[in-house]
Length: 228
Length: 228
Image (tube, rainbow over all chains, first blue to last red):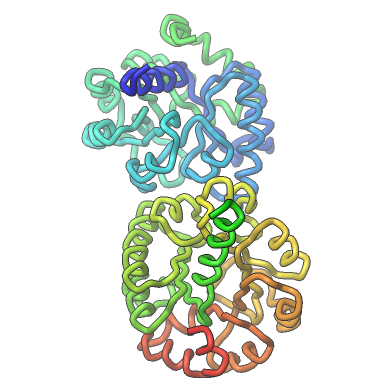
């Protein structure tokens, strides 16, 4: 295997780790009193294959310990584990990837610190940001917020479905639609070509998380199940 | 050179990087409107040889860019550069070290991510925490807060000079006294055996930072200058 083939293989492994229709994100403050760990357990039991740990206001030690446990759980569930923002925690717990915002460390600086196989995802809010992220080597991008959202305090204003239309036509790397996506608007989002949707409150605020995930996954089988 | 000699040499380099009497820490909100970069420039011009970047509430990209610039400045000034909390930024800018709190990632997890030569410092607030930090491989520890302080929002209550007395007798690794240390109580702190003192507002809030540092360094020459 030469270097080119090696890089191709790593690239293919990353694509497979991202080739799932539903991307679940933790949000303890909306989890009806359940901990991130409990919620992650239910998400995985419900069939989630991409799980992002997002937790802003907590001491880093606690975030690290939670991620360590979720890393163990996601390995057992053969699920992809992404840590939001904290690259050091992602590295320490050997997560599959890290998700960065436009205000985080530049992707090139992050890339220098991680092993080749680590996924780096980037939030983007416009076609310009999408092209910039692709040019700078993002493994996937988030497209949004599609609708207004209250689960991300520093979220930018909703960008609407037009940006998703753009992504469907012009983004050749994996992307995930995010921001205010619920059961009631899921069909619309899928119709605009989202290969993967991220949901936060629609999952973590469900009384029965497993049942909610199954409901989401069965919602539009021809689109969602093609990735399972 | 065998492995033991190599480790000894790295250890010696770390000790030399820490063998200075005054440890300056940024605090932009107390810097009279000056940026961290401007303050760092003045600190280095004043003779500071250990500089810690501490900045809680700022987007990570901005912190990274500031640290990148301060890293460049500290290299030129042959000064030791420590980044507070953000191990990923410390790694990305190739700082000399990282300073962790009791609520940060455990030191063992941090150690696994850094090169052998990187300094890891730990805040400690009691003899038990000091011994724990030493056992777990801290390169230096901070002893404090000696006096009440307002520059660290999550600071624990002042522990007083007794803990410094303990450190002087029982701590065999480099340590730095911190917390509410000012010109008016510096003599007292030095008299209790602090080989190095950390100051925040007394430096960053000075109208003339260079002059203030020279004043501090000349304050007790027999103790402070022995390290220069």
